[in-house]
Length: 139
Image (cartoon, rainbow, N blue to C red; front, side, top):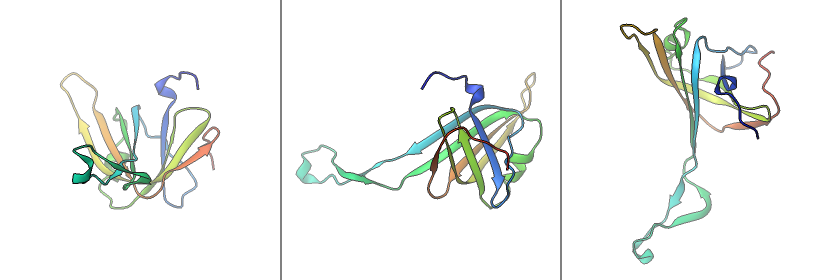
């Protein structure tokens, strides 16, 4: 994989069951986190060394974070609802991820001489699916 400009990484979202994906307005920074922690089976028999169960993960989870310049309040308002969205995160031409997520936090910041910005965090619910190829947001 070759280096890519961060602005080419994208997060899209849509209501569950909808066919049309939405690109958040004003997006600037995107991040993806995945936790695949091991199952800790350390005991007194291990002489103080942490020991993990081979080939088995503890509860796995994933999350997305999005920051940007506020051009509308759609995502911040969406955070007030207690339902999940479908999200897609694409950061190269070879593959992308999709899954169901819920907005767990949203913040807007307004500095004296800065643009109004937003930070939105998505927490995955269920499995994350990796797809081959370029993400196409058109239905």
